[in-house]
Length: 280
Length: 193
Image 1 (cartoon, each protein chain N blue to C red):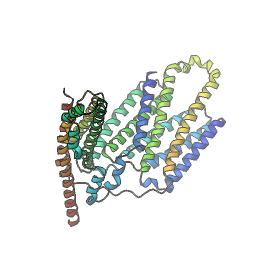
Image 2: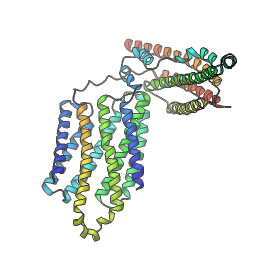
Image 3: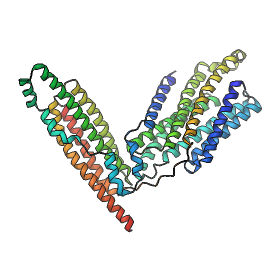
Image 4: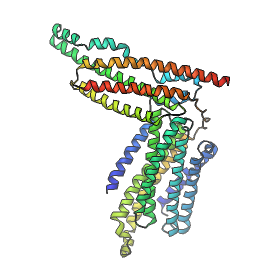
């Protein structure tokens, strides 16, 4: 590993250790257990990949598999953390939760199906499979979090600061992953694909410096944003967590049954008059 | 390069929306803490979040100010420049009034959403209908506002909306009273049972 790779690896590891320290000290696992596990997986994955780099060399086959397996594991854990984020705080609102989880589930199934179909047609290389699935999962995560926030915003159920920070961090990681992987995937499957053919192997040593330059650039961008996300999470965990909110007291269902249609009729009459206003 | 051309702008756009949703709220930020409060406070909470329509109070004055007779009187008696200035101001008043109506519509729609969020069961059809009506209203509002701004809509027509809003405000008051009564009854039953 070169100096830049060492600096990036150490910084990431330091951030992850601080994050896991905060998770443990603040007992975040009592509030967001899956997200806490995700933080643990990030730390363990980073240590495992780093160990593979140090022991087997950064260009070895083991490092290659370790890296891509950790990427897919992280993406899966992140998806579960998003599911937990969707559920947290909303489940107490029985009525809208029944509606919201169905909307989010349909959206997720559609996006996951798209990810599977997208990865299915790719050339048989783990990097391209991994990149495609990671890209599509990142994109799906952003869309699901956006839908969640829109629905919460629509019903006026605001996120707590911690949930907000978790969402922001996940979105930063996902946005950078989605954009970066899209660019790389297009290069690998299009412009650069011929370079991987056996006939081109003789040219590889000449390309070495450029490959290293691109890899360093991508690693720097990716890890800087990754550390930014962890910084956001650590910042939100700097103070002890507030106690869990009491469950909201719901209104009797008759109120909704009586008032909701009446409100909709009024809203409709308002629209009718607006349309009349526009008539010549 | 199609993927890049599509994915990057979409991801950036969604990220901007996300950031906006996360950190630039003004209305709903007031909701949750009160919403977790005991039912007896629901009335106060809803009153805070959903102020009763206030624009209807001035409808009579506005209707009078926008009436054709006022305009005719102005054109007949005042100097041309003053009359023109006054008519321009009438349009500005009409736009402000329209904005007020938009606020009242939003409050009623928000009342519907607050009730839905606090209800143990909701109807998907009702929710979809309300969303549809709200989206439709936003388009109509934008269209009316544009026509008013460009002078293609006679200001007198705005007066037609006053009846609707007056009835709407009355219904909102009823709704508040119903929620309050039901909530108190519900709490009394809970404490008693």
